[in-house]
Length: 156
Length: 117
Image 1 (spheres, rainbow over the protein chains, first blue to last red):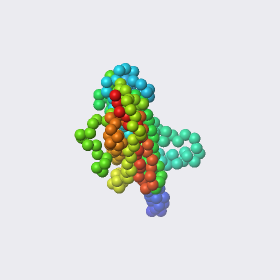
Image 2 (cartoon, rainbow over the protein chains, first blue to last red):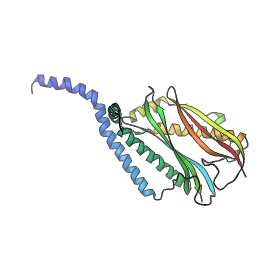
Image 3 (cartoon, chains in turn cyan, blue):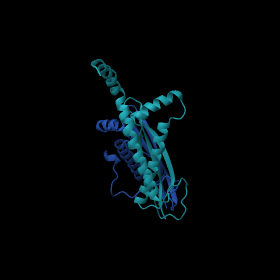
Image 4 (cartoon, rainbow over the protein chains, first blue to last red):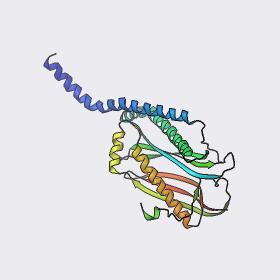
């Protein structure tokens, strides 16, 4: 290849790399990271056994001891997902990237409540509630969402 | 941490629940609504770290811990309020979060202070 061809490749290729490189990086590593974490969560859920959580207001037995249990998580989307989400929101419909991240976060926060329940020696969690709130970024844009799960732990 | 947010060790144990009663106990007297709140802003270092973590997405652990601490403080203030009124339990505890301008968040906990029989 002669000098002009290389020049053309560099003059188009380098700006392209600077413009899309971070997103490409975010796509590859973000996908890898999120998938491995989700797999880990599924394994933790499978290993846990019977689910102690319930949204019922009353316990199913005589209660000896009780206490408030809280767990939280802050979730955000990757740069790549942010770009895809931006494109999606032009046309409306399901924003699949937030969909995926939020359902994952909610699953994670519930699993944390289960683990906390077991750790503190409670048998069940009654009246479990889930809440979501926005964490504003420095430019006022939504950068992250906080998910909270809380309930009353009971010992029979 | 502010001194008013601390719970003195000699204070009686205050039971908390987000159900209408403390399971297995009977409520004797209601002492009204008790509240506790705190406003927290993000630490600049944590903000930068969170920005980096944003590349791959997922959990922002710095924010999770920060909000956890803030919520614990709001709860402590609520408990201190209940203790001042002479209650020994707080029932129907709820949480509310709102973002204040400048990247700060207000965490708010409220419930009904009661005396158990």
